[in-house]
Amino acid sequence: MPKLSCIILVDDDSTTNYLNHSLLLRLEAADRLLTATNGQHALDLLHQHQPTTAAPDTLILLDVQMPVMDGYSFVETYAQLPASRHSIIVVTLTTPLPSHNITRLKQHNVAGFVHKPLTTEKVHQLLKTYFSHLEPDC
Image 1: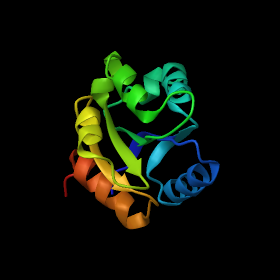
Image 2: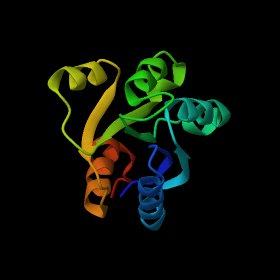
Image 3: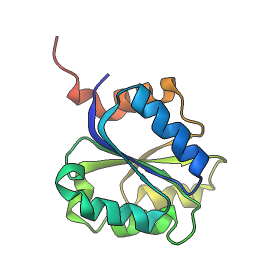
């Protein structure tokens, strides 16, 4: 399993953030794990940690429904940043989204969708799908 430079968890639910953070820490999935409680908080973290999070091996796990700045507004704003080409955004869902919302998110470089809760298997699959190029050649 590749180890990423950074994973950013963006979710307003503190229990979800705690559980996802604990899982990713146990899996040693990234050198740095950042947690944000809304889209604006995530943008602020990205600005503060720009040298680290601009790496091509950054995964952003994003909830859609949050206060202050929701996931839709986050991806629209993030898509305009230079670092946006270097990250993979995967939206975490509790319920399926209508197709027009999926289209709206995919227009702004959202790579995929995964249903909550995160599990070891889901994390492995995400890393395999989006970051297999980081695996050392055997």
